[in-house]
Amino acid sequence: MRRYRSIFLTLICSIFISPNFSFAHGLVGKRLFVEPIATEDANIFSEYDVVVPSYIIGDEGKELALGSSLTLRLTENLGLEIAGEWVSINPDLGEKETGFQNPELTLKYVAYTSPVHESIATVALSVEPPLGKEEIGADDFYAFGTGLFYGKGFGDLPESLMYLRPLMIQGDVTVHHHLTRDPGETTNSLSYDFALYYSLPYLQQFVKDVGIPAPLNRLFPMVEFNFQQVLNGPELGHREALMRPGLIWVGKSTQVGVAAVIPINGSSREETDIGVAGIFSLYLDDLFPKQFKDPIF
Image (cartoon, rainbow, N blue to C red; front, side):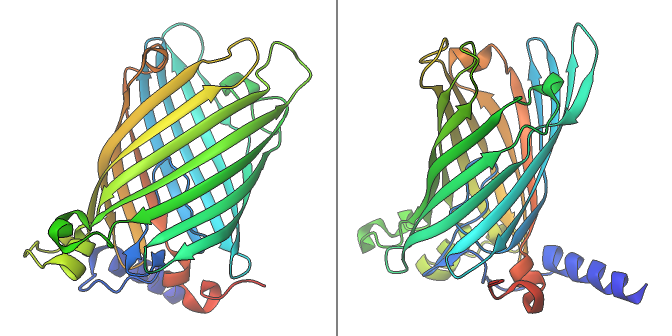
């Protein structure tokens, strides 16, 4: 009982009691890269996305999704991410459906980092086995993805642009290969996302202390843009685009975020009117350094 009480108190302190900027997780040079809500993360540090919820209101009903993922650092530059998502679809007409989407396993290799230029680039290979429920949209075939994930901070801008130095961008480009013999199914698609952040911790520490009080001094105002496009098949050229403006708050070993989900093209508006998404993550390598600080191999 005392053990669980100690773990609980550790979590509470890491979320609410963070008197300084002692970040260790996700650093490239002086830049802290956070876990995006939908965009892929180029970092491979051990972390647990406890829940990544979204609630979408569309023309034909409502959809609630609860995602979760675990990332483990296997070697100095190699990481493994295991992700899953439970979905509840409540249409205006018809019966409610619930179940799991296909799980996704992703190997990520950090191919490039530049602490001076606050840059990181990671190549990735993912696989989605057909283990989910078709009634909630899970595919009944294997899918593979080959991707490039990246991050760039602008701390190397000149002094005349010092208030732009807290800006950073994180993004991904992934080609999804759908292994199906059904000619009516899409065989390839492209997803590309990017997230823009303004780091108040970076502003306070490395540009100018403008006196933002805690806990607001740990905020990252952000906006994500998410795109998905069909590359071949009967829906060639079909593209969906979403925007997610919101806020990320980062503690010593935790992260909490929330964003609106707004369709920004005609195809997306056919399925989405408005929505909200969030994220709650634990940085395992900071929270439990004895177990997760070093690579597994």
